Amino acid sequence: MSIQHLGATTSTDSLRNRKRAATRLAIRRAAIELGLEHGYEHVTVDMICAVCKVSPRTFFNYFGSKEGVYASPSRAMPSEQQRRSFVECSNSGVFDDLFSMVADSLVEVDSNLELFQARHQLIHQTPELLLKEKSRITEVEEIYVGYVLERYRFQGRSETETPDLSDEAHLVVALVSGAMRFALQKWVAGNFHDTPEDLVRSASALVHRIASNEHWP
Amino acid sequence: MSIQHLGATTSTDSLRNRKRAATRLAIRRAAIELGLEHGYEHVTVDMICAVCKVSPRTFFNYFGSKEGVYASPSRAMPSEQQRRSFVECSNSGVFDDLFSMVADSLVEVDSNLELFQARHQLIHQTPELLLKEKSRITEVEEIYVGYVLERYRFQGRSETETPDLSDEAHLVVALVSGAMRFALQKWVAGNFHDTPEDLVRSASALVHRIASNEHWP
DNA sequence: CAGCATAAATGCAGTTTCTGCAAATATGCA
DNA sequence: TGCATATTTGCAGAAACTGCATTTATGCTG
Image (cartoon, rainbow over all chains, first blue to last red; front, side, top):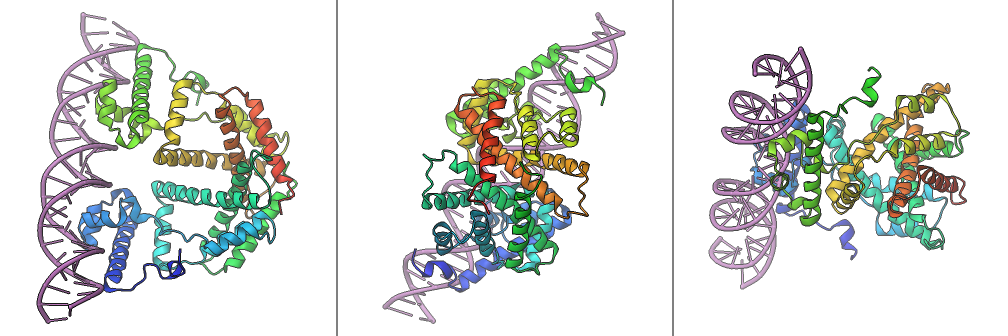
């Protein structure tokens, strides 16, 4: 894991890479456009390929499956530095720290905004895609559970002393995830105007209210 | 929705129904056995049909998809009475009440224990099936979110007064769901010896501890 | 610039999942 | 028994997807 592996890993910007990115984008565009026009289930891979003029075989080389072309590009994970900071430096509670880290690593919406919104719309009107998207999120959450556990262990809490430490981590992540969903919804509804800090503030406020709510046990 | 539609709807126990149940079970058995032996992805519908001697067309009549045969049979949902009780009678906090209701409606593990465990094992060693199972759970959770919202409204809390009431409900359900996962894991690990009351107690204890934890904001 | 190594795109054959439809078979009931 | 209905099945075919060999494009080096 050398330095250049963080920022400039595959971005040699050679003709080859630019072409690759171009076709990838072209296929995505065609797929999402067709999806919004005819509905996900009525779009065939052949139709997509006809529009963007690649062979079906190439389509599968790029995306592996029909669903694959509709999945949002791999979310950015926290950098190694951010992870270490979260594990070893408890700025405030687990919740706030975790939420901040997730929000920070989420800001980089590198891809086309227009395309991002179109895909968002399509996914949310297609149960099958929505399900897939949710399970992708679930997978990411598992990773965060690992981080939280690391932090706990760093703080001296072991699983011999607290046998259900893992469950505790799961619950923390579940809460953060719920708050994050809330924040992102606001972000989308507000046409992406809010800054990451705004997101953290509003979501954090929500959970604080709930956690200290009279309606709680 | 007449009365007889709740308990005795399809259980006429006619020859027809017994046969139906028998083939359904036979197909499930064959599918899970083959799955454990060769791994999910190496099992074809034709293989399953060869073992239990039905036509592939019949297989799809019953389960609709290859994945379908591996899905756990539809979870029992709370009865209308349980739902009303949850919405209108606040015995204790939202959390405890919701957890109790879910646990109660979960006890009915009518199906074969042996088969239940075999499927559990197969699902948990097959990422694709595990994902599907999780999204099924997510869908059920959405229903519970609805219940919680109903309860809130019954208590006079409206979404005009508390705009993110829905998010609050989502978070509550997320917590209950996490605790439930914890309880079920214990249940399976303990070879299904615990009673539903045991599950409620231990899971509830977990969340109480976390909610009142020094590690919380 | 020529030529070679490598990456990417393609064509094609074949497997598998899944659907619609109509025919055959089994069951329930009068 | 005999008719109405439910279930099973076969068959044709669409569509997703894979492996493999071939062609085409790119990068690099002399």
